[in-house]
Length: 464
Image (cartoon, rainbow, N blue to C red; front, top):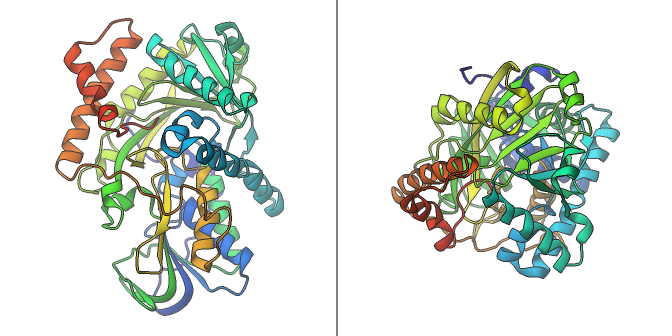
């Protein structure tokens, strides 16, 4: 089995020269902690709305080499999870969020065209398939929600034959086609955002981890060899936020792993998968898969280890069993790929909230703002998050800051050690239940009861 290593995306993307680490003292209007998608979109939005704003970005490693450069590159908003949105935010809130998310793909397209950068943006529908009877419910809920809310065009049911017109597999029983969808090369996008921010006058300091944040007027951000004083602070650190006290009870970290095949363009033509559709199945710990510009297939599995106490350790990047599950998913869901060589595998942490939707807000009594909880779907929503966080930092109130995602109550997860240990037990049971279902068996009652426990408690486990 191939060992997990460095993401192929990072090697394929045009290289960049590291920015200097912060040394000495700097003053800023807005200091952003985190140089991934959310932090960089926020920086660009700040400079666009307020060109005179002094913006400083502090990145612990290199911009875009965390989750932003490791993900699957699925780019979409909130029409596909409309059924889940309804349960959390009601009909009106769900529609408001989904409609706001409709600006995401146009926003990324405008960025790429205006800046003249190739981020491998390919606009094509998102396809969810059922590979077992237990996964049918997810498809039915999606179609029903779109119909009941008067947006039937956003979720079209497909028969097995209709699914095969887009991708042939004997495993696909039926599907749902979501109109809104696209893919990108995630590291290319992250580096393009970084370069654009620097060009726009944002002061970016890489290899500059935050040592301490002292909230006040002004806020003081201490780093190993410097200090930033800033009136406004934006914390945009993705899964690392699971260890940040103001939001720690609302987040946990999961590992998500992918495998990448050798180029097989002729095989893609043979199975009709040439339209660029991104695909996922209906599992709790879903499989997600897509093609690349050079004819490779990336298969991901959101079934990696669960975090404990907010720590991000080697389990999130070096877990061989998680790589094995991603490869097994490839061979199972696409049997024609049985003998295709895997060239690369890698993994990383994702920040999962209790209801699997992000939340944005301001720490009470401070001018420290945050965005977190993308739950495995951050490539697109981070664009929306950047627009929201820029407005919060500038004190602007409008339709975006009034979205139900902003300053909302998120049901807290159990405290440690129950969150970590309990989550690991539920994860193990859910994996065994879903493996049995795909094999046409019914898992034992105790396993099914443990796997269903989060739903009974009003929590969500996994990345769906």
